[in-house]
Amino acid sequence: MKKSVEIIGFPIISISAGEEIGRVKSIIVNPEKGSVDFLTVEHEDSQVSVKAIPFQKIIGIGKYAITVESTHSILDLNEIPIANQLINKKVNIKGAQVMTRVGELVGEIAEYYVNETNGRILSVDVTTEDQHSIEVSSENIITYGESLLILNEEFSKGEVETRDPVEAPAPVETKKSFHFSTTANQERINDLDRKQEELLEGKQATKNIVNSHGETVVTEGRVLTKAEIDQLKQYGSSVMVELSMNVK
Image 1 (tube, one colour):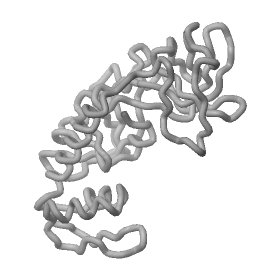
Image 2 (cartoon, helix red, strand yellow):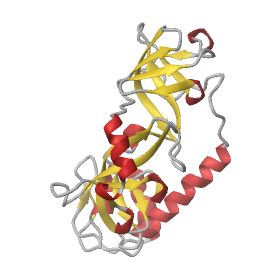
Image 3 (tube, one colour):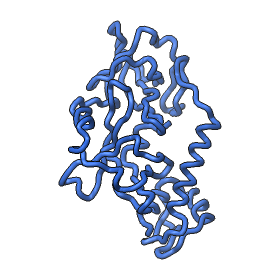
Image 4 (cartoon, one colour):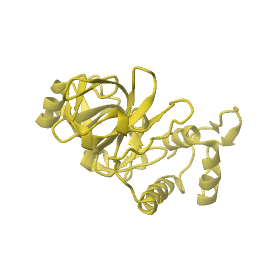
């Protein structure tokens, strides 16, 4: 699963072209389905028209980029009436207030988690009035409003484990949270990594790539090998994203 913050701003890579074709500008939520249905795209022609990618067109969301088959996966928003309808509903999950069906205020959403395979919203992180963080499974959400989420009667703050967001930033499983197969998740991550390695292997760097310490780790004109790509991963996502944007 992916945090929303791990999706917004991510580069979008065309597998057929082997290059970046835009970046994720925003997430469009379908409140009836409780899912992310589209991603809007920042691109060179953004002043002319708004573009979007249907979530089903995404091949993978990896550590360093989102991959799609080709530029044809990005559509003009005018060609997608349903996307326009969803945008007009203005459903913003982050920052929304959370309330139970009986009127009890739970807190404010700090983050939410998305299934990177089908776009379903899996859970939300809620900051309570006493500044604790709790994870609420999407099974408990009955309404996604413009700036308010409503939970069902089965939700009870007393049944949900709380955590200090500073001490434990990782999602905490609740009694009603989804259970994921660690093996299946790892296989999916490994598959996405392999696809991204294939995008970079044999490509030529078009500029010097530096790490967080200002050291050059890839020189302009260097043709990348699989061994070098594996070695570059130690420098983190910032180097890999920069590299993905500057190869031919």
